[in-house]
Image (cartoon, one colour):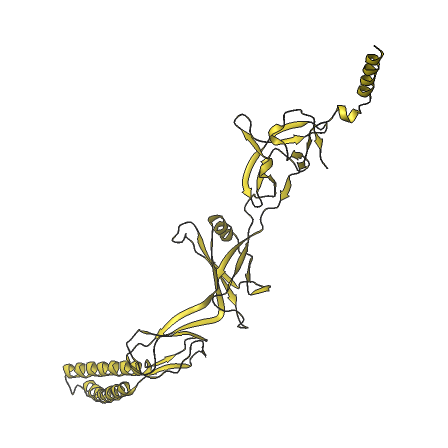
Length: 343
């Protein structure tokens, strides 16, 4: 009997010795806060740079190439001779037509004098005039053909590719060299409709060009152009930026990014949360679990926006940056449940 009394007394003492913390243990949760994400100030587009001008130079006449000593990559000043067609036949044609022209010119002057004195018929005068004009045109055509047997650089530039060899017989309009102008560089990118509208509404657009090979330098275009209708893919507009290249440091075919300042009308900074903290059910829609001032759980409905990078989602309404949003034990939470926040 005494043994039973002692056992019951011991049990009572153990029950009375429990701490308040042990009697009131609540589930522990981790919380996060909505982060403010600023509206994008620019968009970047990749590109491959191009020469400002690219021309395929050709002769307007045909014949065997007499002079052509050109290497790919060779530089020519504007007006410098690139290639010459054997001019022998052109010189002969020029001399023959010149002789006929000079003779017709003298005959026309003589007959015009006689016609003015009524000493010759009008028919003879008209024949002399027609012969003079015909021989003059033939002579000018021969001079032009002779001049066209020489190919000159139309602007300061480089030979990108040579398409013929010396002594080759070329035909008119067949490309002789591909000639490029690197005094300026052209950068092209395709931009979406909202960007195109923003650019049309502004007098000037802030564009910055960066090349992968020159990471420490930024280039500001001297000009830019935007197509006024969508390109063939029907979903974008072609933006062309022109860069001055006076020091000749830039080349065609360089890769880089074109950054265009951008701020859509009415677009402001917004809040984001990790996608994993957002719950959804048919009855309540999208919601998050928050902890109130009494450490109790409450369901808060939220309106979602666009998905953002780093697995975050835009929150249009429902929470503020000060709200404590629960990030753990989400399937086991319930309204007004008491929780402990993990530090």
